[in-house]
Image: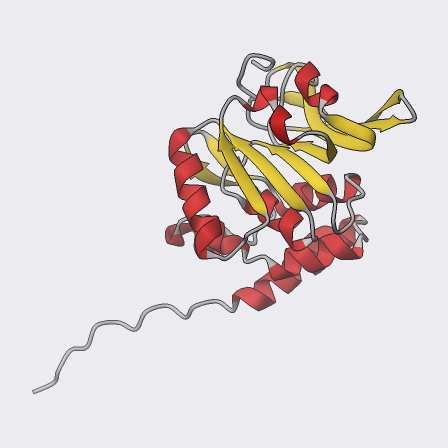
Length: 224
């Protein structure tokens, strides 16, 4: 009499190898060469910022949904925005749209102190708990309308907005230090945006267009 055994579970992929391949094939191959960005994206375990059911998709070349109409951006976009900041260890950064916490974790791994705003209550509490569990101590979160920033902690060396709005919110520009850099998707029509980099230097503002992108809406008093 034979005994039937349940099928063996599928092998668990080696996530470290997946991260290294992601950085090599999706990021370095497209021209990202900031060593701090590359090392941070190798170090941060992207799959931990989504549900276990989506682990197999964690290192693919695409955004991944996290619920509440939000996503983790495509790895290349996370790397591109991080590189455009030209950030260095010890800087203070303001992030608008914490979401899963992945972008904040990458900036933290680059040595920045990150102040991050999330407006969706469920995401705020889940992400704050996750960052605490991962012992990421240099990310400070606030539940609020991100278009107002966090004025009580300003000014910031760097500001990153991970949602698209019709224009750069004036309160964020007010909180950008001099010198300072802000990176944000901007577009007069929803989901049709260009990635802009705003540089403040010696009292002057310079704006650069870094190409077409598609982000979720920046919702708030100074957004949609």
